[in-house]
Structure formats: C-alpha cells, structure tokens
Length: 230
Image 1 (tube, rainbow, N blue to C red):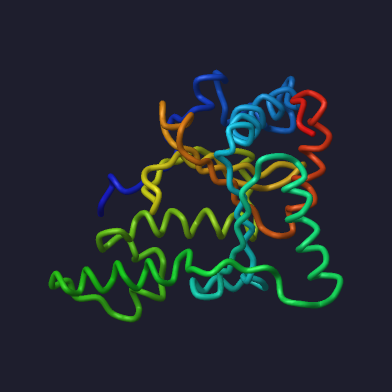
Image 2 (cartoon, rainbow, N blue to C red; image 1 turned 45 degrees about the vertical axis):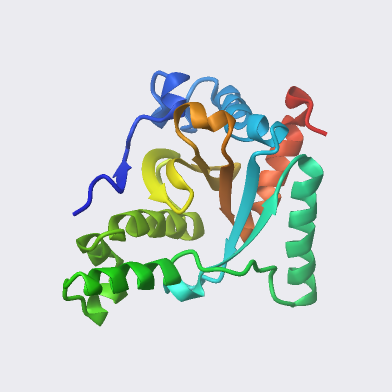
C-alpha cells in the first residue's frame, strides 16, 4: 500500500485556526455560524479574490450507482459571485428543460484508473477485473490509494456522510492537495487546497454535487456582506 499517496484525518489549514476543527462545525458547537464564515473566508473568498478558484460540479451517479465511468463533471473558474450564479443557472435551466447537464471533457476516475492499472500490469503486477470493480482493492497498485481516496470523497459528496467535517491529504493530477470536506445543514462540499505557502499562488478547487449548487449559492450570498463579495 502506498501510504504517501494519501492520508486521511490529517492536520490541515483549519487546524491552524480552530483548536478542534472536527467539532467546530457540529450543530451543537458554540459559535458554529462564525466558524462557517471564517472557513468560507479562508478557503473560498481569498482564492476567489486572487482569481485562483475553480468550481467543479459533479453529476451522473444516482440510485446508489458509483461506476467510475458514470461520474461526470463541469468546471467553472470563479472570480466573483456572479460566476457562481451563472453556473447554478445553467444547471437549473437543464433541470427545467429536461436536457443534459453541462459537462466538461475529461475523466475524473475512469481514465486515471485504467492508466494506473495499465502501468502496474506493465511492471509485472497481476491485476484482474475484480480489482478494477472493487475500489477497496485499488490501493494494491501504484496510484490506487490516491484514486480510492478521491472515489470515497466523491461518493460521500453524492450520497452523504454523518461527519460534519473531515480533513485529508491526497496526491492529485495538480499535485498534493489538502481535502477539506464538509457535510453541513447548509450544504455539502469539499475544498481541495494547495498546502502551505502554495495556497497563495496555486488554484483551490471546490467540488460539490449538482444538488448542492443552490444551497452553496445561498450560503455565499448570505455571507456576502461580511466579505464584500458582490
């Protein structure tokens, strides 16, 4: 198992702000709303102002399905709240008109999985279709632990999670990223942020299911007066 590819429940940027970030967003936490606004300012507003922020809206998995090839996405660079409104409007229009959701070319899991397994086979590692079909077996080959970590994140964002917050670290195609995952009454989403000093110069990625676009838009609009976000 390649433990350097990903680590779950690791200290991240929010550990610098909160003594116990794993409970800072619980419903019974004191000053919970303040914690949410501080988190949004750090992980969303600052990179939006720097034009270092991308929204990734996922769709395609439904009714318990989670085939890697079925996971689709659309990406939007965000520089202000109007960019978020536009993304939400595109998905709302598709839903209203019963047309296909917006989709960006590319593969989040299927192609990287095929490539990693092909590399492992080329190195002499025997892999079968059962390994490909069962994500829990992906960590057995190089690159598989990172893909499994991302798979679990996407699955939780689509189908839900009990924990209000979790922090992980994972190797991605953009480099190592901190994963800050939230499952709140106000919305469910995850930030993939560059570690350390790279936070100020590299892009932050916000990932959410299409059903969470409107809740996130509402949360940011309600918070806008605090952030001077027009």
